Length: 91
Image (cartoon, rainbow, N blue to C red; front, side, top):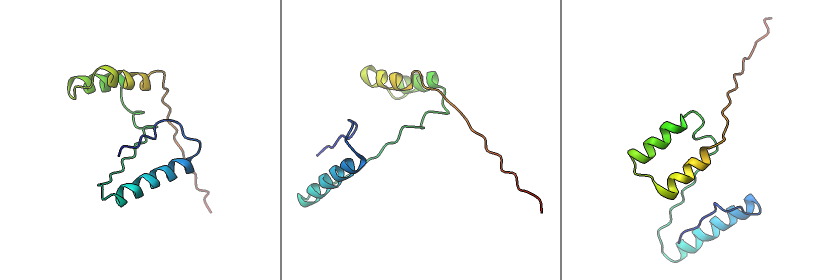
């Protein structure tokens, strides 16, 4: 059974309950269960997007809709860095 939570759900609680319910039903039916979680929110922030897209296409054969999805996801994204400096007061 495949469960796709990529569509917006009402709450995080709803998503967690849906995953739990699906896993319990699979186990009850003696099915093998596998849960894969992807958080792409910061995954590509340090990568040159043009190089990434080129490698996805040339080395891994990503093309068509899949490559378009990556291109769309990476377009108009901004990168930022924050450097924190902690100063310790001398006693």
